[in-house]
Image 1: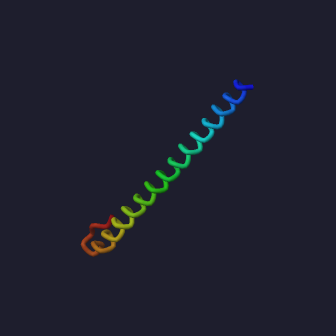
Image 2: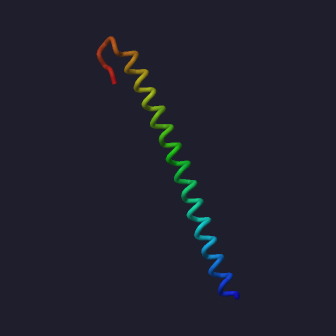
Image 3: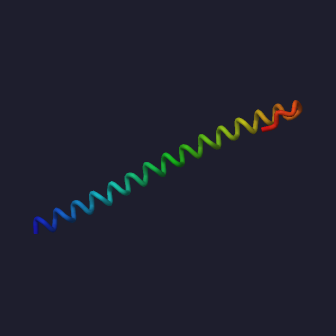
Length: 57
């Protein structure tokens, strides 16, 4: 019985670890994509500002 509980604990711990890793990766990917979008917007604004001079990005 103790061995069974131990193996269940290991499985639950593994699932929790996988879930936490997934959540952290999701947050990181979301954060990274927001930063990329922000940088893209900044470059677009700069490109829009300098369009008359021909530095369109």
